[in-house]
Image (cartoon, rainbow, N blue to C red; front, side, top):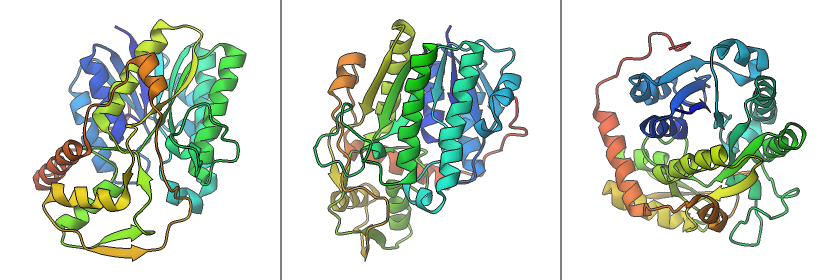
Length: 336
């Protein structure tokens, strides 16, 4: 039974991934610092299903505290693969707090890499972002594109910097690495600051939807189960292929314009949207569009969920979670 260390395990994607790995027979060690970007209670609820599994262990820990903090928390553990999802999220907020994003996403990654080096843990799956492509004109986005002048937000720059660091540790210390650039992931438990979640809540409350720009910007929306399947396949690939350094896109290869997304969310909710037109936000890109041929070839990655089906799953979860009574929180996060 391989052991996977999942950073950011209480988040949207991390909690789904932890459950998938447990179902696949992995032992999972989860780390999270409960960053206040959104409500800690939501993240604790995300963890409840995994905490019921005997093969899951949780530690509340901040990667910014350094390799020694990791070494202390994980002293008794033998880790086969690290899945590094933990990051300070959000393009817009990173424009206002660039230093905080560099500290969490770059320095935090260095601390994790140093712990891996010192502990001789050789396999790393790193969650990067489609934001590293910026406003690259050529479509779809390929992993071999030159990106040194592409990043237009501190968040994107922090993710590309972390990718560069994973190569440095591969080159110097033989780290086995798969970098995966995630394209806008949605589904149950999606972060409340993301568009689909915000739009659905506004529609359910009878409020207008803010539209930044003319509605022509487009995103490659990927349902969370498809992204998690790609991650699970990537982990299996790492464990079977020593000496790997690869970068892949995990997207849906089907961009959706903002105006069409709003209409689709309205259909899923059963409400005709009212729009509030606003200027474009700093740091936002015009389009994201993943070329997923490399992930298909290496991993057999093949996203299955249509936007309409995915939105129905999301809205069903949102309505049930809103109607559910308050769930008990963790009595103590550390070392559960």
